[in-house]
Amino acid sequence: MMLAGKVALVTGAGSGIGRAIALKLAGAGARIVVTDAVAERTVEVAGEIASAGGTALAFRLDITDQQNIDEVRSALEAQAAAPDIVVNNAGWNRAEPFLSNTPDLWRRVIDINFLGHVMVTRAFLDRMIVAGRGGKIVNISSDAGRVGSSGETVYAGAKGAVIAFTKSLAREMARHRINVNCVCPGPTDTPQARTNAPSLNEALAKAIPFRRFADPAEIAGAVLFFSSDEANFVTGQVMSVSGGLTMNG
Image (tube, rainbow, N blue to C red):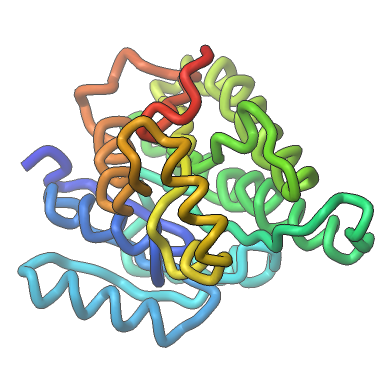
């Protein structure tokens, strides 16, 4: 199996794209560290993985809370489960015009969608370097960070920061054989997307050449590639998984 013997930590793994990533990597043989801000979801997803014959650990993780991140890191070290793969997936957004935003919204969007990626990555890098086995970091950004998105201006800025963070960290980590890459989903059929007005989702689907939203498992496939040995000579790259909605480089 592609990831046999590997430990993969996935943030925001309780639902949507994160859940699909956890299941996909588990199916490839990885031992999964399922983390989410909602503890009950982590237990449910870990149970799904176990039912399918995989192995998983479940932890509540608020990626904006440094103490919580440190606690999870210590717990994993105690169980000899330091990750070989870190997938920074957790994210959050509330679509509204920029002129309607409040500073509290700005801070929450930036803390979850950018600084959370930075904090989780930093927490596990030292152990990955000391272990000397190399590793994979996969950041989930968004096509909003590549091309912008009306009604998501600060979110797009935070996701653009994830792309720049990915490229810069990839340069620094190459000497340690740690690959750092980024997946940018386009519109995807997630619980959050289903809260949109139906007219908005219909318009988005019509704009996509395939005329549909992505299935979360299709995003997870790109993450599996970047997490595997097939991507050992790939770093600092950004892959758009948007059904052709955005085709510029």
